[in-house]
Length: 53
Image 1 (spheres, rainbow, N blue to C red):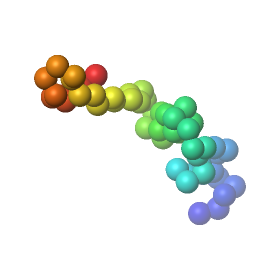
Image 2 (image 1 turned 90 degrees about the horizontal axis):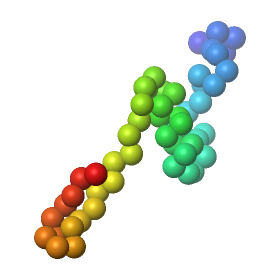
Image 3 (image 1 turned 90 degrees about the vertical axis):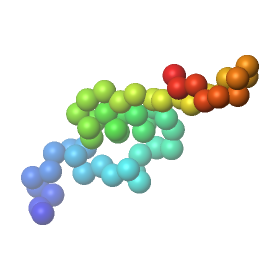
């Protein structure tokens, strides 16, 4: 495919993204065309079970 028809920024690949969370979230939001949510998994100190937040 000719690069003449590719908009600037559309040719970015995951390997070209800076190695930090903000850059990754920005890349994923642009690629998916919508919101991206960061999911944290933690364990409760009281019960020892996994807590999803």
